[in-house]
Amino acid sequence: MRFDGKVALITAAASGIGRATAGIIGAEGGTVVLVDTAADRLERAAAEIKLSGAKAHGQCADALDPKQVGRVVEETVGDFGRIDILVNAVGGSTIIDRPAATVDELTLDDWQRLIAFNLEGTFLF
Image (tube, rainbow, N blue to C red; front, side):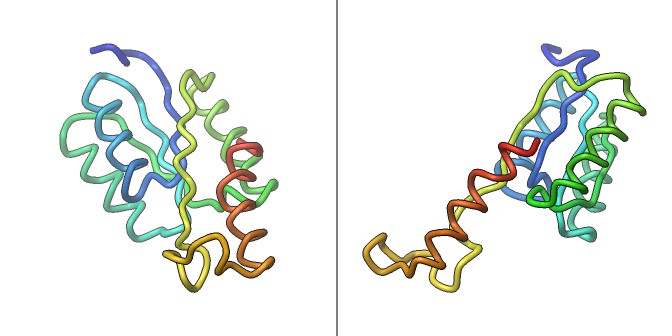
């Protein structure tokens, strides 16, 4: 139970690496606050983690929106007193039309969207 009593805030937690990490931390005693933009998948992920006996709470928010990030952080600290662990799992290339494009095939707009998607959420949280 290496996460016993710890509060973990996890972005992109409705699927993929974020979801898997939330499951592990929850199973090992941590309270997980799952953050994602997909409300339906977020609810399912939190419910599945709770079914395993873990403490899980969903927060629907966009990690690229400073106001939403601020709200999530404030509410998490207000509800649990602190954040011990932050997992920034937002990222990838699915934000552009051709996620498998090589760098030389990207437009400047694609490049800027990728940089924002992969770095801004991490910075904001």
